[in-house]
Amino acid sequence: MNWNTWIRQFHRWVSIAFTLSVVATFIALAQNKPLVWVSYVPLLPLTLLVVTGLYLFALPYLARRRTGSADRQQ
Image (cartoon, rainbow, N blue to C red; front, top):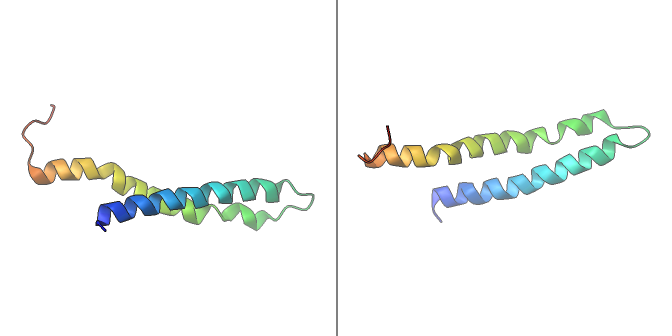
């Protein structure tokens, strides 16, 4: 499996985990005695999403620079 493909798959699965953790946080904080520490649970998947998302965002620019494409718009 290609490295870029692996990161893309990882990003997709982490986005599902992030969504579920946000839903769980809303449910936990809506209780009579909310557990405040639960609000920190989505931060780990969010951090991973930021790192992989920035990498995926930069991929086309890095590939264009690597190939030395002359048809860049200026």
